Image 1 (tube, helix red, strand yellow):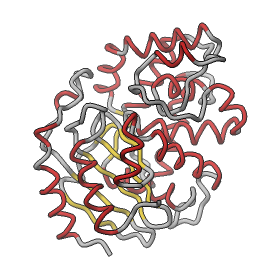
Image 2 (spheres, rainbow, N blue to C red):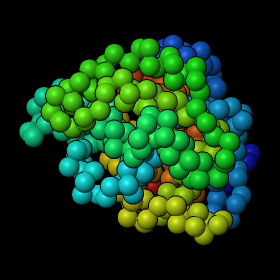
Image 3 (cartoon, helix red, strand yellow):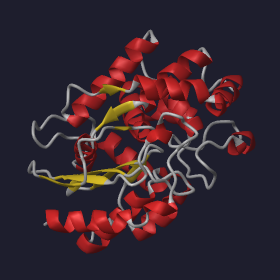
Image 4 (tube, helix red, strand yellow):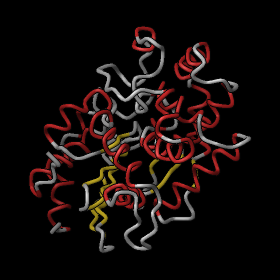
Length: 307
């Protein structure tokens, strides 16, 4: 189905758009990325991996981690409990906006893919200490990716922790309205380390494949998450996964996907494949500009849209 030569050609073609984007320099450690980098891995249910570009480069998850943390807390607490704290509606605002929190009654983040919602979700990760909760999340990530060596970048976590003033503001707002009730600095430590979990495009694609196969590992036949949890997560990927460009992405590309400001994209084509992309040149919404262009080529060529 997918040809490596064609994938290489798509990467070369998409790279031409890189000059229109910028790396996420507001997090100093991410500002070191090369905007010309672009790589992709496609993971098939039969175990085949088709890739192009340097897929050995590690990328931090950033907001991609939101979808994984959401799956974990729904498994921990149940759908009903989680959505008492966070809504299910898309927002046309930027991912770090505080505006809708002030307008929504009763006050709660509109969805788990904006920063306020993600902080509320991370707050719900079970465990007695930050270390224990982080370890639970990393263990879940390792199982999804089939890679026991996955960890987090201390440099990126520290860089984010030191500059996360807006996220701290969101935390204090959430605490004022009883959405969270833990120490803000503890939550910020956990959240910044969560965002700094790093892996290759191949690992990303493998996680996308598990979501594509409704939460089941196609190689071990183990159910890593219940079908309904995978369904909820994929629905959020479609409605909110690409920040406030999710509607346009759904029309042009039509694949459940989640992006991060590191330039990573995790995409999941139901029953067909998982896709992992790294392209750090971002558009003005915070999505990988070259990565989106690459997915556009793929979706049109292979009719990947779910709509």
